[in-house]
Image (tube, rainbow, N blue to C red):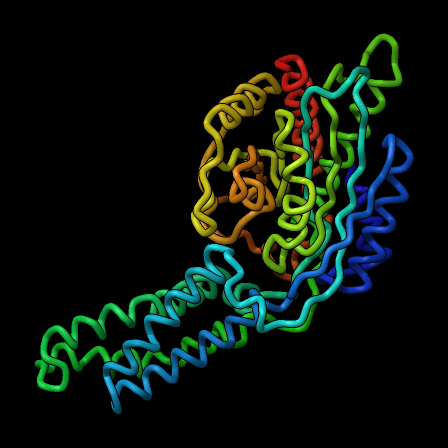
Length: 390
């Protein structure tokens, strides 16, 4: 089962969002899906691929400017600090795309393989992963969890600064006691941490095996399994569930492919019961877990879908682990933010940083074959149960 991800990496290497490598990998997937899908749709879209990570440089520069202004005009520094914290939260942390207009758009594609049911569709199941990979978070590669800690500390300083400035002004501004002035020196001494945001990524594009050719492989093999059943009299396929095998593009640029998909097809999909079952970072079988909440995009997945998936885990002999995604986001969030049912399954730890996450260590040899097989088994069983319930 790992053959697909090994093949794609061997042919195209890293696949940065909007790059020729991503485009060619998507075309290749479309050709392979034609072998078992009723039809395959290549869905083009355009998005500002540098908007999310590029904005980090802006936030770091404004933070340093805040510290300089602090010694000149506290009210002006406070106003700028508030704007910086709000933009960091709204644009980058919660994926609301407030600064998109500052960045140039680049073309990308989603690949959508359609597996038709035996009868007229009464419901839809989208099984998805994303094809693109990212440039390396070299602080995380070099310093592991310390690098992650520095990243969080940098964001924390940007978010905390306006609160401390407000306390300073409420305490009397320039006439405040030394306690309120001291944080200015503390932040000045800690200001080099802003380099973590400014130089977050290197130019090296990572292979992106577990993140997220593993999810693409699970979606692909799930569609192939369901299509194969549909061709066998003794093992009929789904009765009334239309299955969409989705390989989204540009997820690493801020869920761009899934957001474009929901924007284009969401209104039509809402006319039928529809759910997106998304797979991301399927690496270890012991770490397979249902994500019920994603903290950054502020989404909580429907309890009925989470419980249904828990039952499926148990039916497949997999412990139904469940938890939140502590940082970042998955393509399922793009559905949830538009009021559509979705849920994500991951296969890495959600309590500590995996060494392969967004680093050069994200290679196929680190992905367990059994994790992929179990994820496919879960997806197929979920599809069959979803079909029976409708």
